[in-house]
Image (cartoon, rainbow, N blue to C red; front, top):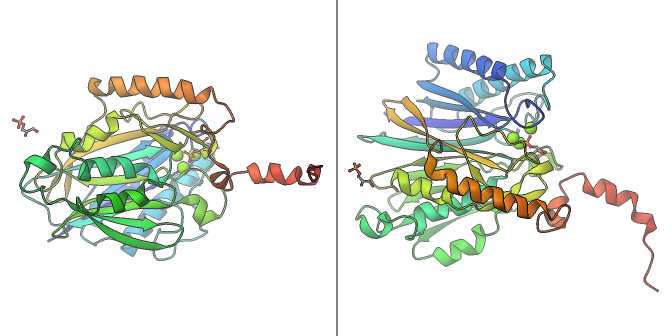
Length: 364
Ligand code: 13P
Ligand code: 13P
Ligand code: MG
Ligand code: MG
Ligand code: MG
């Protein structure tokens, strides 16, 4: 009997500002998830936070995109929003962009990554969650995990991985999708996924169609038509066997790669891998963070988590992130620290520009 792993997340109020989550919200979410487990709506769950984003990790037997599961997640977010309002936390209900639930949380603000799988003899899974960045932030690490032999030794060494993988890429502005096979079409894939604001890796499969990774591709600015906070995406990756080893999946995060997000969602900054405890972006509301939780699935039970970046081997990338953060911060309001104008369209900057419109005159 297949099992579905669903990660559904939303920012329903920050403590303090956008830096972290108040324990009362986690407590309320856990209470409701425990209730759902009791009623056998879900098999198991783990509730955590990354920065100011509430993360609901669930296993169940209903398949992906199931109304009951999405509705339950929506209800947890609205209940936690009530708690946030009482404490006057910052941006209570920030990511709930619809007034009422209808059918599916997709397009309503929360981020979703789900996969339905037949649990293997052993099923090690890594769940990545980021704060202060946008949905395209997984493109580079997913490419490295599943297509770069300098990252993933298994692509060369392992007979189960040597054939490569298939990438499902979404054009989030054109509402289209395309599949690429690697290694054959690696260069074609990179034509698109290098543009992280528009082309986003939704999922990765083996050539037999077995799912290896899935990410949340929701872009809040495109849903709301204006800036309402960053997407703060999540990503689920299966490891070992036909998929990259745990260490190959974690390795891309040792490179302090630069993503969009950070202060007011309007800047480029390096992505810092940290423990859950240290995922509290405060310097210039950042730098952007990523956490990684490891689980072994056992008949749908989430055995874990292990806090994968809570390890001294990531000290060096954290140090490099701080050096890059200093260097980028010194640019202040200048590009390439600040996002280019077409991305700034989704911020409050156009309102400021509008006020100055009449002051412009023709060149003499
Ligand atoms: P162990 O001998 O510790 O199980 O390691 C096996 C391995 O292949 C690690 O990549
Ligand atoms: P969040 O999306 O994490 O709420 O960040 C919003 C922001 O503007 C931080 O400066
Ligand atoms: Mg927030
Ligand atoms: Mg956030
Ligand atoms: Mg956000």
